Image 1 (tube, rainbow, N blue to C red):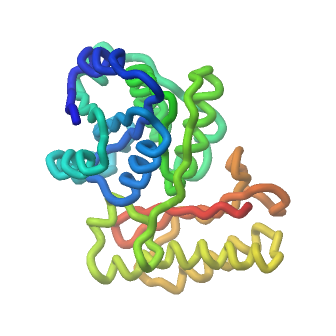
Image 2: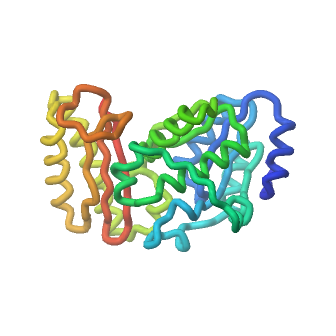
Length: 277
């Protein structure tokens, strides 16, 4: 496994690769969710490249960029065990030099849910992913279903800009109690960790109601909200039943839909989702 930082070194190595290249962009502090993406990429491609870069432009002013967990040596050992070929660890100076002034702004699907709660977040995500795609030139790129809106945004960007990259979505990896794996889970104390299971419980409720034939999206949203409000540590940011492609809120579930939510468990903001299709 080769670990490179400078962009020119990554490009030189990339030119030497033959066959398909599977790419997994990460912000590090890897867990089983990330490793599921790597395993899928390893199965489906001749070569696997993983990037580790905590992207400053997708964090808001009051968000946890400085406190975001970082443990590079641990991450590299995990990736070595998975048979990754190249790990790309770029610097801020190269990714965002002082004269940097070009941005990728995907409209419409970024205006809702996370986009409404975190202004500018997806502008930072789309820009850094576009830059990484340009540098790595992958055949396929792997993302987790947990970040469902991010997947919608990146698919839209790839289609609109004719990038010719296949986007592979891997199901959410969960703890035994249903909590979606996330680097932010480390911030949860024991009581908060237990309270956080309410996200999965609310999504399970939505899915069960839908399976039982409920098509009224507002009724499902209300029942999810009622369940969450029984957890005293949980504060609702949003509860959504939306069109799976446009992310527009639905009145009637008559097409593939996405149940999603964002909660704060005390100070820790968590997101999760479940497809209804």
